[in-house]
Image 1 (tube, rainbow, N blue to C red):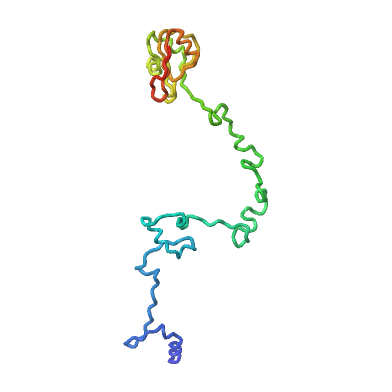
Image 2 (image 1 turned 90 degrees about the vertical axis):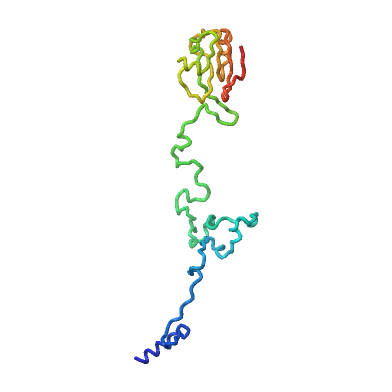
Length: 232
């Protein structure tokens, strides 16, 4: 039994044992790691392995750092390294490069054109066409609230006819207030005489009929509502 105990003592390295003054054996405490010590600050892990050991404390000081074209760098982890395809199966994207082994989409070159759906009616042909809409620069179409001339027949001579007065009198119905108003020739005859018509636009035929009956036409601004032109 004593010989076994002596052999066990010889197997233990002498540097790992510390003989105390009382004659008892105690193991030497191992040095603490600087990463696990409580006094070391917490550091953020960088995903770029080339910059994990780099000292970037000067770049983090934004107040005293002058950024130029030679020290601009993306944030760690914001840029992903491109995938090298076709460089062996160990890289993960070798051989078929992620396109599979068979099929039309695995062939070289562009297999189909943009918008092709395998022969069925594509989406850009299934949707209806917008006929009459502006199709390019220089094309402009303004939508108006129309006021017919026969709606002004109930007005007396010398009165002012605009959309607000016609709506209060019940001669026209409520329409979109954001659109400008335009006077056009109506369904019946125009019998009102000596009235002043105010609108944002008017057709040439309607202006001629109003002026022939002794009336006056005033064109209003679509934005401010002020009178732009006046013609009797």
